[in-house]
Image (cartoon, rainbow, N blue to C red; front, top):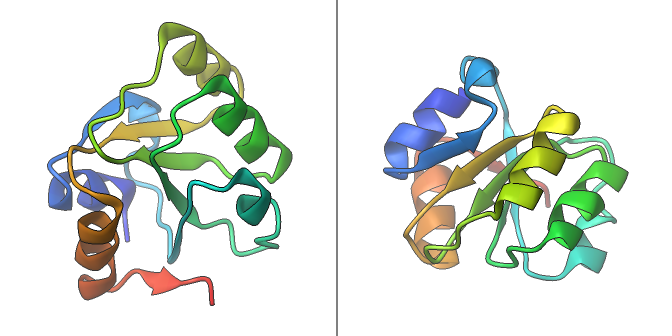
Length: 114
């Protein structure tokens, strides 16, 4: 699924990474536990989280994960956006709950990591 399609399905807003909207992703993972995110392996999933901190960006950087959807109306700070830009990440803001966000993506063909 293209990042552009993800943004459209979720009525989302791209906070950074607009130049990457035509890239394709097959997998998604939802968690507020950064320790879970570090165990994902090589699928490079889109991450859905309500944990909106600089640590989220740093954890995804360590795990080579580069697309983050912040659910529950969370908004990344300017510091988070700058760090994400430095790491060529895409940050998406979404007003939906993590449950609804996951359901929308799954029902439109996004695959779970496991």
